[in-house]
Length: 296
Image (cartoon, rainbow, N blue to C red):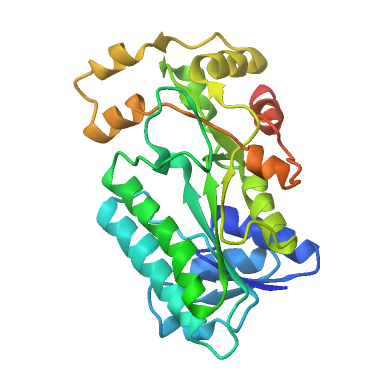
């Protein structure tokens, strides 16, 4: 299978590694020369192209599948729309209008589209309630990913990621130093974020569907921080309630909304499809980071 990974960054490079190791042909697409160099260093083909530019995408050969894994770089809603909505639409149309169209698209979204559910469980059937302009853009992009490919004769899938962590993104100090505000963490290790998409592609699953990509155990932040401190051999960090954090003068509106957003994300659908996690919970996923910390 030949797969174009558009926006081949943190998760995309790992996806390419996993595909290549199983005999597939990944092609990573980045708009910078440095990005293409990182793809080459990972051991598979890289192509330099701006995924929001239809003409630039002609540099990417015909493929069997597209993975749209681009990021807006943490910028605001306008930048998010340019990438996730306009860029996604451009990519689907550019590949869909070719003589040899792909068989499917996988678009990587975010569980942020769920908004606040006061700590209750959410799954793929839960109505979306985005509470920020950016997450509203992500919800719009999900609709495009599921509907637009049909116009060109191929299928779309949404892989809805929880919070990513892994090499280079463990952020131990954030939880070891504190203070830690109460709430839930929904997480997935980078290797499983990539592994789930690889599995859906190569097993031809979840066509025309949404699949939440999250590990087995949403973690209460206070319990997670205490466990992490105990494992690292340091004092447990100070804690704050939501009310205490919301009283801080330095809190932005975006930060306020994040604090007020609480949910637990289910992975029952992904598990039912047969995916086996390399890191089922944070306990397995943080082991290397903890060992590195203790051996400093």
